[in-house]
Image (tube, rainbow, N blue to C red; front, top):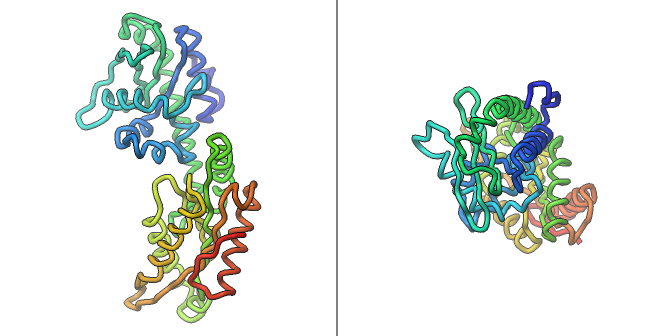
Length: 324
């Protein structure tokens, strides 16, 4: 690998080139990549929670990649072995390792830039009897690859910052189409479901007009904290605009999502929101739509969840209403 090979710093394209190059030069059966973030998530996961660790769009396809494409769960226990080798307290040196996990042989090659582990390349197959000798042979190219993988992730992180709402710290409306498309494709692949909750704060205009927009903004910040506390790591919370929020519940059917929505509604209802020494009580109206039960496209799903929320608002407010 040469510097001129990396003319585009898009993570997926950088990793695709690196994996292809490793496959060509070593003749391995498959080449896999996991970033340091991916390793940390693996280390903290169990057989029961692995799906949560790898379901969010910022991980699948960016931090865990295989050539040829391989199911993430098939590799989960292999990645756990790798995480034990390179993660955790006191891990300061990074050497190549060879190990067998039936029926395959694996060689783990750490990629380090500026003294920090960026991730691990995993070569599958009987490619070398001596991992240290193989690492030494590939090291000049791997050092270049580590540099550009680092730059690509830094660029990705900067892009992700543009997806955050500055006031609440939740995702913003700009990121919603990307996440929805990812979840639709994943649900098609896994024949699964996911749900969208559309939330609107009841009588928020009265608060804004009566207390002022500064107080309203502080309340939105507190609302964001409540929503973050009520969802899993694999779910997404968005500030859609004004006092409207959207929550995407990954791998969640309508019945389960309704229970989550009720939990959120009760959490908001029971929380005293305190601003400048004044305690206010808020409620939310929530509309629920599930893919693919209620809609088969992103725009239709948003529209149905929005309509369900407004139907609940017209009916009574402080309610969860399911699309039909």
